[in-house]
Length: 63
Image (cartoon, rainbow, N blue to C red):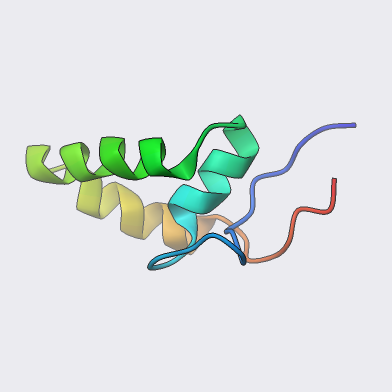
């Protein structure tokens, strides 16, 4: 059975992107958030987050 990437409904701070990536990659979402914060300071992170928020479907991964 394949995994699907969704915005997290249970572990979200802003849009659920980091929580969803954490669930999908089986990594602690806090680590994803720290990496994303570092990317924001490099100038790429904010745009990437907004794009991910728009592109990743909203839902609950029931796998």
